[in-house]
Every structure is written in C-alpha cells, then in structure tokens.
Image (cartoon, helix red, strand yellow):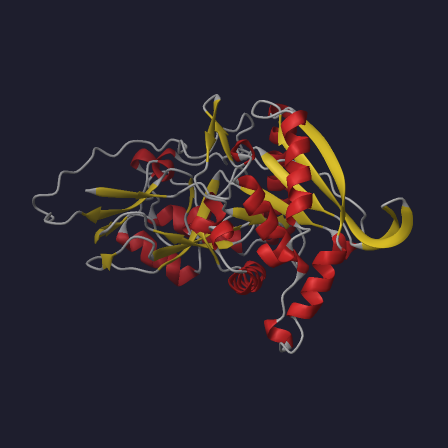
Length: 392
C-alpha cells in the first residue's frame, strides 16, 4: 500500500488546503501525474504523484486543510488488491523530512480527529452541512474523538447568519506576506550569509541578443533573462557547492541545475518555482519554459515538482530599475544570484574610456558550504560566461 502524503512545497509551507482531486478510486496513477490541486499560502499548486499505482482511498475531502505530511490518499501497488494490500497503521502525521524543520512552526491548531486524517463526521451531518452551506472545517466537533454531529452543524449554521459571529474572510495577501516573512526570518537566523557583487559588461550579450532576435516574431524573441539563467547554470557546473541544499547539518549537492525564478505576483508577493535542467536546454526552450512558468505562476497553476526542488534561485530586478539586488537565500538552498538593470556607464577598455552597457551580478551564499574566495571565482566565471553568448 502506497501512502500519498501532502508534500512540502517550500520552506514557507506548513499546511495546505485541498481544492480538488484529479483522480478517483480505481484510477491508475503514473509517476508525475497530477492527482490533486492544493492551495498553499502563495498559490494553488498541482500536486504530482511520485509513485505508480491504483487509487484505493481518498482520505481528505476538498476544502480540508491539513499539515504537510498528512496521508491524503492510498494507492495499491502492482499486484495488490484491496483484500491483499498490507495496510500501514494510521498515525498522526509528522512534517516531511524533505523540508528542513522550521523553528517557528505556524501550523494552526486543529482538532485531533482532523490532524489524524479524515475528519470524523457522520454522513447525515455532512449532508446537512452541505444543505446549510456550512464549511465542515469551521465546525468544532463535540462527538466522540472530536466527531462533528448534526447538532454541531446546526449550531454552526446559526452562528453563520449572525453578523457578530461571522468568521473573518482570510486575507490571502496577508497570509502570503506572513509565509514569506517566516521563511526569510528563518533564513537570516540560520544561514550565515555572505554577499559579493561584480560589474558585468553586457555589450556582447546585448548585441548578440539583438542579432538573434532579428526576423523573429515578438512571441519568439529571446529575453536577456534566459541568457542569464543559462550562464548561471553553466557556471554551477564549475562550482557545485552553490547548487543544492543544506539539510540535517550537511550539504547535499544537486545533480542538475533546477533554477528557481523569482516571479512577482499580480496580487502582491513573490514566488520562485523552478525551471528544471536549465544547463541542458537551448535558449529557445528556456524562453518557452520561462514564459510558461510566469504565465502559470500568475494564473495559480504551478506543479508541486516546480515548487519543491529549486536548487538555487535567480532574481532579476533590473526591470524594476534597481542597479543591484542582494537577496536572501531561500532555505534549504545555499545560494542566490541577482541581476540589476543594464545601463550604459563609463568603462575603461585597454586604457581608454568608453561607454559600456553593464549590469551588476550579485551572489548571496551560505558560509557553511562555501566562502568568499569561491564566491568571487563563481562571479568571475559567470561574468566570463556572459562574454560568450554564442556558447550559451
């Protein structure tokens, strides 16, 4: 029997609300298939399965909010039947090891029955709640082991129509800001940051990009952002200590560069889902992937794999007009690269003064894994990568 648990979709996620199941009991599930949509404090995320099997039970109802690690469904492995399946005794969930533990847990206190998995409620009470438009999650159960009774539902319905007892509407923007603040506070508290920056001449890159975009329709044109992403990915091959995670007291290097791209959301806030295997993709493919990622991030249609496995983050605030950005590392990652705006500035070349389009590349890195010497070499190598745009 395979347990499908609510995964951690980032260091700032402690719980999630199931919005919709994309499968039903009896459906065959493949690896990578989207099986559920879960709302986090930042966005609705399509949650994928990492196992293959046949859906046996769906244990969580849409609308329920559960902690990370909660068993949401069970799958039958190949060859298993409901009669032969070996069931694991159901226990209270714990936070998944995939996410570094937060010293400031923000899990909302919940009735014991809800934390243990499926909420205890009789079919009659559930039906009556639907008739009255009562959200079961808001009802305190007074029955055995916290079970919700008919009386509980009716009492909740009465309270619902009383203005004095109407529950406040959740402020999504405030929830996101709180989640970001929690993750960043943890980062600054736990990660010994160091910061470096390097001016990077961009004449060759801008001229190459202008030529590459000649004759392309607007929808197929490349942006400087994809050159920068590819340059970062190729540089990481020389500096693997900048690419990976710090977990359980040790650095875990990543085998590929899954770069988290910082994207501002229209309703406010920031999210950094990953583009996978950046170093192995062409610039054209990266442009397609970046456009798709930005579109889906702002539409609230990201996948769990994009949220859970960025190995480094790149943020570009050049369009916002800043000369440089010094970011905060997103735990458990160990580095963040920033780019400022490209602007013409005085530049000395072979003893002569000229005007050069240039940007400032910055690095925030984890002193537990690397030091300023390696960080400086990383930025120098990144600068050199951007001088050969034809090789990206």
